[in-house]
Amino acid sequence: MQTTATLPLPRPTGRHPRLLLLSCLLLCLAPPRLGAQSDPLDQWTSHSVAYGSDGVAYGDGQFVAVGGGTILASTDGANWTLRAEIYGAPLLEDVAYGNGLWVAVGTWMNLRPTGAVLTSTDGATWTSSSVPVLLSGVAYANGQFLAVGAGALTSTDGASWTVPNPGLQGGLNGICYGNGQFVGVGPSGAILTSSDGANWTGRYSGTANRLQRVAYGNGQFVAVGWYGTILTSTDGATWTTRNSCTGPTIDLEGIAYHSGQFVAVGWYGTILTSTDGANWTGRNSGTGGVLWGVAYGNGRFVAVGSALLTSGTVTATPEVRLAPGPAPAWSANGMSLALDGPVGSNYVIQASSDLVNWTPILSFNLTNSPFYFRDTTATNSAARFYRAMVQ
Image (tube, rainbow, N blue to C red; front, side):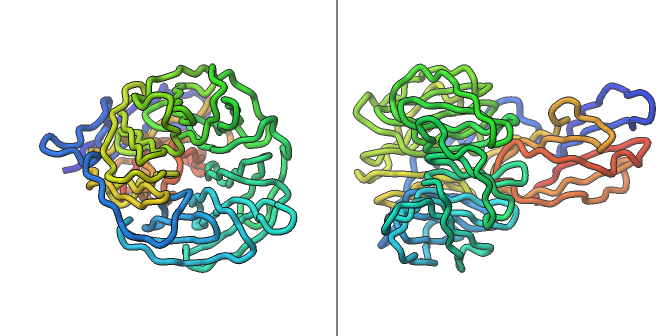
């Protein structure tokens, strides 16, 4: 059964149309329950893979894991295929998917070290290139890839890269997008934020520990790093230190968010989960190896490192919200909207003038949440309604 929620906007004046936002998905105001009988985040299964991986992402119906000079792919997280062995001594550290393209980043270690970028439209055939900045993290949002490391680079197609900031102070290890901004984390507790990937603002983290990765979900950023460091922020500017329950001997290396759960991974098979970023629960991974990265897709979390693990099936009512974009939402160029929902799902945005006849205006795989877009055809309507649907 389909559940709807409506949000009326104030009546505008002049030629501005009346706009209603309609979400054809259950609007959840509290974290979803994952099931009463057994917790899938206590059910981790190890899978035999001959190659270790440092980073993993999900998109276009498959997981892609990268590490060293190898690239693996899997549709279910359990059965993996070696897609590429890249020659030239690359050290691949992260991968992201967006706009029909996979982008993996790292460092070319042969001769003079330079940044490595590999791209693929299908996860199987890859094209490699070099950039002048050593790279360790990548994310996709607002129609562009942002790669970070010793500096920051942006690209719309993965082939041509702009270097707006070739020498970020201290460098960055990880990057994510949420709440209208990029947040990057790095050595010595470095945290920087940017709305466009070009202009950056340093933030006070309250720690000198190395921060490795950062994720956004449930209205907040969560950064993880060495010595069990966990920090949270609702705006990217003010950060709070949290108790990771691991003690100062465990380095945390990766984090992901989906279905109301943050999942952090690290050394000695450490897996931690939290619904709010503040209170964490340790899980039994069944391995003592290091876990470098984690991602969600196809109903489960996948953790990669010296071991490769999948969680039990995570079933939850998706938290999806369709709302006006950053002010001013309405302009002469149309209506700005923001969709906040589970990353890895396929969505279609539809519009209507009468709530009877609906027309698709945008289809996409959500790789970063929230996702911002503008309906330029809204200026032609006296009344406009929207709905978001999972395909």
